[in-house]
Each structure stands twice: as C-alpha cells, then as structure tokens.
Image 1 (cartoon, one colour):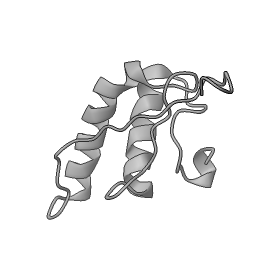
Image 2 (cartoon, one colour; image 1 turned 180 degrees about the vertical axis):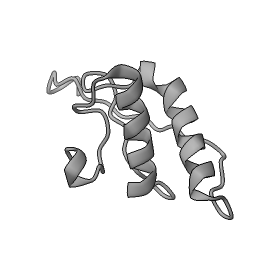
Image 3 (spheres, one colour; image 1 turned 180 degrees about the horizontal axis):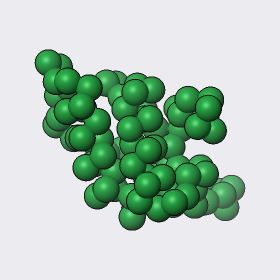
Image 4 (cartoon, one colour; image 1 turned 90 degrees about the vertical axis):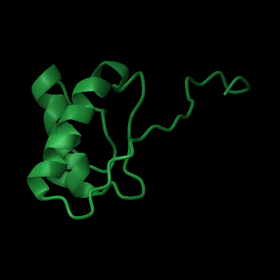
Length: 87
C-alpha cells in the first residue's frame, strides 16, 4: 500500500457468538446489536466488512438491514449482500 499510494488496508474482527442451536430471531438480534456498535467504524471509505467462516448471506443481510436503518445509507458498506440489496 505504501508502494502504490492506494488507500487499502486490511483488518479482521469478530465475536464469540455461536449460532449453533440459536433461532433465526436470536441470530438476527445478535447481528443487529453487533452492527449497532460497529456502524460508526465502517463505511465505503473506512472499512468494508465481509462474510467469513460462519457468516453467510443470512447474517450479512441482517447486518446490512441494521446499518441501513441506523445510517439511512447503504452503498459500499458490506460485501456478500444479496443481489436485490446491491450485492
């Protein structure tokens, strides 16, 4: 990045939430709470979260929905979204 002068970097984050045995509603509430705290640290020009092990389209959809509710903005915020949500 210092060689190209492009504003690119990388980072990882996560939680110890285990969705095994949890209902869709419990997973959704967790994702919404997670995004409520994360939303001030992500965005198209800041950091763009993506799915990973255990984080698929369902979870990305929940995260995306909460971000959209909180910020009324949704472009370039998450990768792995459904096509109907700009993925």
